[in-house]
Image (cartoon, rainbow, N blue to C red; front, side, top):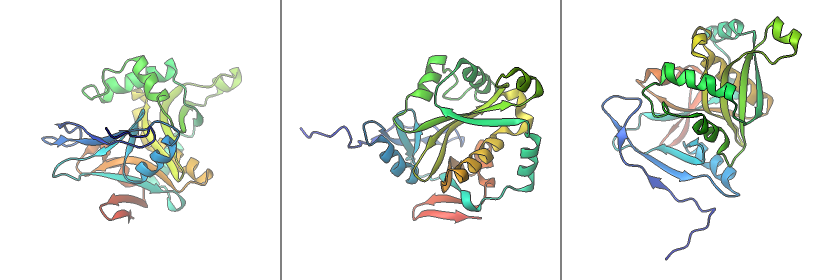
Length: 247
């Protein structure tokens, strides 16, 4: 019997299941485990090859006859916010983000639960408990951070409190960028466009950290829930011939 090192990745293929982005289609994924001392190095390589991380798993689509899921990364050094993005930043001038060690809290889970119930009631994460959420945050063998976004108001500043939490991003720190693993926000604050704000904040953070990219995951043409990713330009999209720039 062939023996495999713990640090040698083994890849597996999932069974077909309904596609969450495009109606009438099925999805399959190829995946491997991110464990051992080389987990961070492996995650860097796989992310550059179009994989995404979920807990200790790295995966990418492997669908028969469909290549609609396209990996997208923002070119940090050249990115300039559009006029509408600048309006969103101005609208959220009272929000401050803080990057922290990835530790789950009940405060985060409360918003996570409200976000799922409001936007993804029928999704694959709909039944996640507080323990499931804790695993999502903590089950990482690589450098992972939580960015908390809180409302800055006079009352919290005077009392020394941190302010009301309204959005959260789970983010991996890679060799060449920040990878936004999962983000969520208080659904009652939807008018603030907090999803866009978090991407803008990550671009600013990556620039300060000297990182080249912000990885946004998959853009799917024809999927309304993924369309926002195409607005962050310039960006690079992964093609069969490598990363291609899009203005």
